[in-house]
Image 1 (cartoon, rainbow, N blue to C red):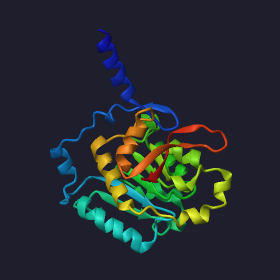
Image 2: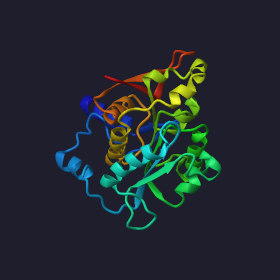
Image 3: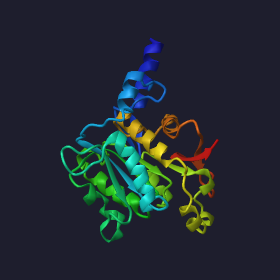
Length: 259
């Protein structure tokens, strides 16, 4: 009887999802049970792509938006996932470069650029200021579902307001060298913006695969760190972000450091 109660309790906890508010989402996999079979993994990792109705939007922002740099990454990923060309025969990947692809260079235009596309996920790299408001606008489209975006949203190395992007993304990942996000760090932002991870292509590939495997937002609970650890991989040490002023640890904000 006690064993049954414990199992039921564990299953219930896996259904909890939290961005800023604690929400419920029943489709997120348990990170400790997500042992992908070789058959399923090889299917996801297959280099031959097929047309996809759903898209994964990847926004390249500050520090990661140089034309040749983006082209190299997109060319590599599109060989595996296919590139959305606006037709029914298009692939999975829908890249946007900030500010070039955004009318008037405004990140607030993100919802209109996504348009009628049905997303399987949203990844923002180097999120510019006010990205959190753009994602909040996407949430408004799902008011019938308690303002909860039904697909995962991952943020890597943002330049946006820390609390804002934490509230609108499933998780946020920074580099350890970027510091705590305190006021002192803001003075060094220009230097931080120019710093890039060496293997963004691998991080994005892993993030896309995880979105396809989980097919749901990640839970904002104690299991989240295990999910993010799987995404960033074994080459990085993962730890929780600690606010320099309050000393509080974030629930869904992490820092990575190369091992």
